[in-house]
Structure formats: C-alpha cells, structure tokens
Image (cartoon, rainbow, N blue to C red; front, side):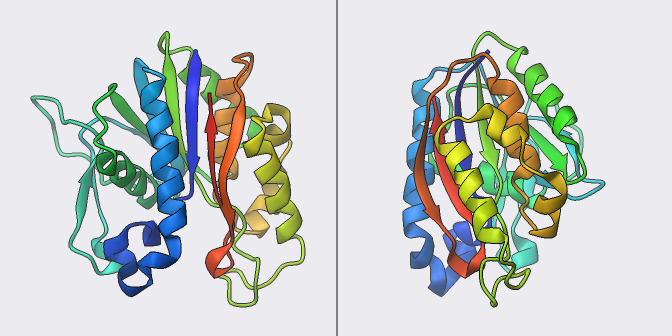
Length: 238
C-alpha cells in the first residue's frame, strides 16, 4: 500500500555541480525537494520506488546499485541508486531522471528502505501507468514513491519548446492535482497535449495516481515555478 510520495522535478540543473554559476537559481527547488524526501523517510516505508521519465530503450526497472553519471553535462559526477548487492553484474546506466533522483536520495542520506528504479517511456498510456502504479503499491505493506518529472517546457519564448499558450493552463492543472493528491485529475491529463508541451512528468505522475488509488493520502504543493520556461513542481503526499 502506498503510504507516502514525493514529487520532484528532474532537470540536471538541480545538481549544483551541473548548474555551476546558475546553481542559486534553483536553491528554493532544492530545499523543497529535500523537505519532500524527508517526509518519505518519516513514513517508514518497507520499499521505495524511484520513478521518472526515460527515453525509448531506457525504460524499465533499475535495481538497487544501478549507477548513473552527469558526464554528458560536462561534470565528472556519478551517482548510485541505493546500495549495490554483494554480487552485481554490469547494468545499463540510469536515465537522467533517475540519476537526479539518486542524487536527491544521496543528498538526504537515504538509508530507510530498499530502493528500486523505474524508467517510464513517454508513450505509456494513462491506463498502463495506473496499472503499473497499482502493482507498485501492492508490492509491500508500506510503499513510498519518489516521482520525478517536469511540467511543460513551453512557458516562454526562451523555453526549450518555445512559447505555447496552452502551457500555463496545463501546468496549473497539474499543480492543482499534485497539490491536492488529485488522483482522478492526474489520470485525466491528456497524453497528447503533454507530449506537445514536452511535459515529461505526465506518465510518472499517472503512475503515482494509480498507486494512490484508495490510499486516502493528502497532498501539499511545496514549490511551483517555471524557471527557464519549464514548469517545476514539488509536492508531498502522505
């Protein structure tokens, strides 16, 4: 059963070493993420799933000990998703979203429950997302989720997707749903519109919605902003 969830954005710029001189611009987001992850630990989960968007070919499960790197962003920094088993084979690297999640957990000193990662392809339907969420929630008596994902990338003319007048409304709807633990509202987010607005958080948020069905959780929006023209949200469900 899902007992807690933290929702965080996943831009590599959240990692100060990647952001370098621009790092202070996301200090408020980092603080909110730290608060949300701290609430996960307080829920005493038996298992933590880290869920985030992944490109085709990089989606699927990532076991504890999987590693990621920010070398592609010009930084010699590696991260690990929890503790590696005593015997471990070579594994594919974490997608960027899960690498950011691993960084957030390491920053918080996470040692509260076993971890598993899940990369979600953009094309995953709402029904499939909800089904996956239900499976995660049923996997242990007390399950927690760290859900990574950004809102639209079309909020300004300098945004990665340029300006789209629909972006502000989409982000407002997502923020309301995340801030109120609105399961139905998250599942109702339009996948096609999300794709057009480059909102990578849609599928991970809908996995959260499926996991939260019947759990009776309350939500709080801890942070909402659109630096660089991209919607970033931090929320805590418990």
